[in-house]
Image 1 (cartoon, protein in one colour):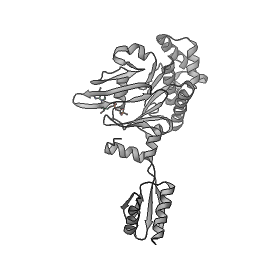
Image 2: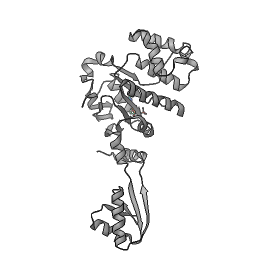
Image 3: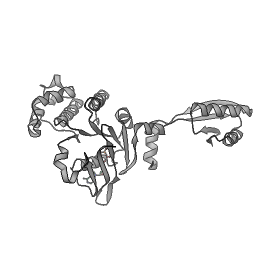
Image 4: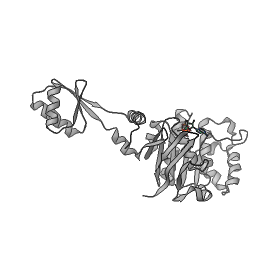
Length: 303
Ligand SMILES: Nc1ncnc2c1ncn2[C@@H]1O[C@H](COP(=O)(O)OP(=O)(O)OP(=O)(O)O)[C@@H](O)[C@H]1O
């Protein structure tokens, strides 16, 4: 697989504190990579090292297959980023602010209109930024990061502090950049729900360590449902199921079926009925992704 970003044992210590602890991140081409973790987990520090804004204590970063240490300038030419709330000249318009940066980046003037259109700010291009909502400012920040037409876009908590409609706009924008322009995107967040709605690949960090990295589908599979059976003689029922090779657990006077697929449930029910065990209830016990995230960050879950 082609990785746009690959970090190898990336580590950062501040004094004695290991803030990033051996992170090996792999971002496949064209993916929206959700970089997820509670506040203080080390996401921003990782991102800073990925952008060459901070030197790793050890380990390295490869972007587009090249070592960031050796080819920083060439690599960063093709990377766009938004790492903290961008600052603007409030008394200048969106266009004027962008124009100032365009001159530094050195791209054709026509690119201004394009990026404003992509972030849907074309109608307010000539309005002063001081009247903009936080969401509009964030979109202007993304427009700025798109000026150089990057192949990789890195957004550190881009929806922090936005209201729900602002969050939806950023979400749609990211989806669109991925879909229409095939951009590879890394977006960090401490909110699972946010990542769940846009990411195709997920990396979860906790206390500086990567505790899960895989497709969002894999993550959802972990949220697979269990089924609870409430029956008349639960111990007897449990023995019957175990004797027939059905994985179960006995807890709180009920039976938990590990595999909640239809045919397993049907088979369990059939076996119990054959033994004259009364079945009172068959219930779903679906763990939410949120539960799983909490569980992972609590237990240092390792895949
Ligand atoms: N320059 C620094 N010097 C010392 N400690 C730092 C520095 N930068 C970050 N830290 C510490 O490193 C830890 C991780 O911070 P980091 O910003 O990387 O986390 P994060 O996952 O991005 O969380 P948040 O969402 O809160 O930004 C925190 O405890 C922070 O206080």
